[in-house]
Image 1: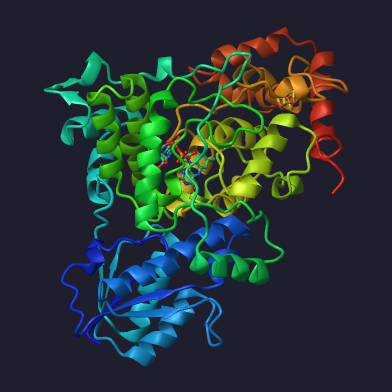
Image 2: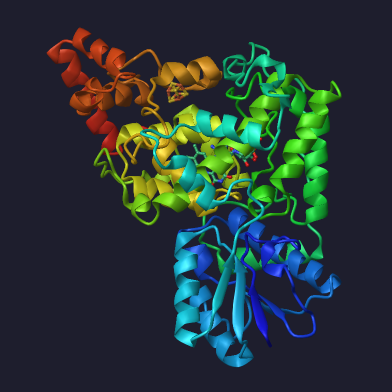
Length: 514
Ligand code: FAD
Ligand code: SF4
């Protein structure tokens, strides 16, 4: 073997840079399924199944493309258990003269592979990941010399540079940002008829994976009975088409809204296909822009959607790769509580959290506002150690890869980076959830109550958060108003909040018997 091309579970793209110049006569692709990737965080069954099913279908695609592959399967008797250990064994066995790979999505994996290449004394060529619009070098250049980083500047720069939704030098429709139009709740009659999500009946290969995951990871969280994610490029393209035809037009307006028992709404559900590289963001963005230009979707929906991909997705990747490894350790609010155990089971009597957790565990999916303003908000205000929150988000979602999950969790959701990603901590009382969903109507708690038996834990923890971080937040220009409201509370009222928050932290509120 001349060149061994390392392919990771989130690099399932035949046109990835690692394959440039691939010569089937002398080169060999290498892919390994290892237990460590499901145990370094307690990976849910849907997430592990997503990766393994997509990898096995990609192995088929490589074969069809005539590219030789060394494929180590999870159930191989001599599987070494970790990427590093497996690579060490295979380098000794296959004796390549050099290693090539596309830049990985995970700092830990990069370190492990570099260490193994060095140990074997082999050159390792790491190529830019062309999947992304922006290289890490370009992001670093963008970030340098700016006092503060803001997604909006970055996003406008990318719109111009890649001529996305532009009319000449001007943003299409004369406006860069339609966020203000995209925050509506559903009316009392709910979201109406939501089109069914694009589902892909597991084929024999996927069914084998589902059985393997059930067997091997029996005690891991989550369920597999409704597994229907796209696991091939063809399926991912069909899912994209279905989103453009059936959902995009309604994506924007109710982007932040929630409805009980409706996990899919008008979101795209394309994050896993994108992150595993079954889809290229350029084709997704182009399909959305074309739909607007052809009059099939309104600009506020299309802009709102494109902002997530060309803006946020690229931006968080830049943050990750320019801030690691220190970023993973950040804990600006010195939060140290444990994550409640029921995050892994959904056994809570809080209606909003129960709904978000149940769909997370059964599908490996929740939309952005559920992640940010239901699960994330609760953990933030409870004061959970951010690394535990990170381990949960990385474990439970089918789209979870560290470069995108970590900045969203530590930065945007938990304010652990002290305001690098988001300009302020996202905190709110239960009233926010009441406004964006009908959850509170079916809940034993009252979002308007701050203390006492029926107090909504979000509302209690909101006031408790303000009190605990009063000095820090009073200095923050965008938080000062919220902190000022604290002055209205008498010492007795403050004490009642503190007492109730302590009950919540002791697990006396919110948890259902296991
Ligand atoms: P849509 O609402 O249809 O959005 C379209 C696409 O935009 C998504 O598919 C995704 O690729 C991209 N996107 C949207 N929001 C973001 C964002 N904030 N950052 C980066 N890309 C974005 N996204 C992941 O892909 N993997 C994760 O592990 C992940 N963890 C998260 C953890 C927390 C605490 C939070 C608050 C957000 C996280 N997100 C993550 C971002 C976002 O919630 C998901 O991308 C989105 O919910 C996926 O569903 P969708 O494909 O239906 O998205
Ligand atoms: Fe959630 Fe509080 Fe509303 Fe219950 S009352 S659904 S806990 S926000």
